[in-house]
Image (cartoon, rainbow, N blue to C red; front, side, top):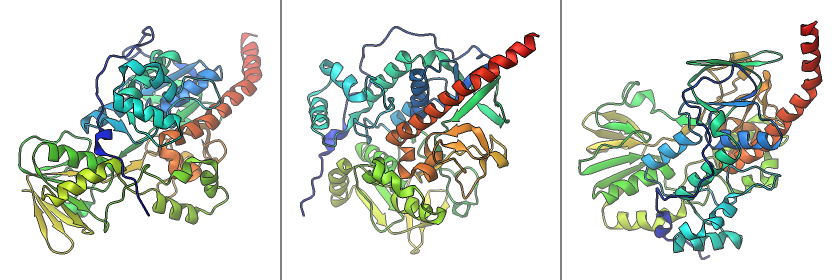
Length: 439
């Protein structure tokens, strides 16, 4: 069998180019939002942007988006830039646009700005038009997200705030942030994922020892030897950065070998027949599927570069060796008794879904092994029917693709339609209530 491996040059695209933009809209990052709304969206990442855009198409305009950064997709791109990532793993057909409407999609947007693109980027667009896999430049994706936020009036409906509580009742949801509080008919939680912490056994828990940091923190400059712990795409970017700086990089991979594939989950789960594998399947079977198909992997484009670096001795890979202890200095103690000594170690141990625990009462989340109980048709919380989840938290209802951008679109289509229908159904009751109040 012949395996086609894309070349590493596809990982490079310019960053920070000037893109034509729609007329600026008011950025509501300092003023307080209104005290009430039809819908509150918590989180303005790609999932939150998709939900807000979809609701706009349903005619739902009375929305408030609350985000800790206050910029649509701001935190997402900050993390991407911290890693020096220039292209996305998601292909052109996976984007935070709106399903079922004749919106400008990501491929359309890229073609409209053909003159800005490099020859390599133009070739990737032709590949996408022919139905083949292609990589999307981060620069194109960010410009497209700005276009979506402006054209669907999301920017002017986004406020900066750290949400402390989400309190659902039978007829409303109150979202309390650090500076304000909003009561809405519905809430959509687009909380994303947070980094996975190292086991307490590595150094006794708490903040990492000197010389150790996590992937979402700046990596200190200097030092000849760098260790990267993890098996996913983030680890690959950290390794690439270390090699480019002339460091000797040690890569610690717990499994017997690294995995290279186009997407971080099996591509079948992006299609209806793949998502149907979760329908009517027991909870234990779903856990097994999630464990088997939601595993760390790396884009194929990295493979030639990493294999060449290993052959040249610039990259040392410690395969199938779990870490048992981390000591200052920095020493990584492996389960076979060996020790890796480096100047700095970066931990890229994956992420965990943010499911709403800590924000909502336990009887609303109904946490089941790190997953919320959701209505599998609407993605509403079973314990809080006016609150919905889009993103990684919907994994056990939608499948492994829930955490990916295309999974966001599937969940968004259902959630937006449900919220819009609920608002239409409730409108006569709300009007009657106002009439009674006037009397």
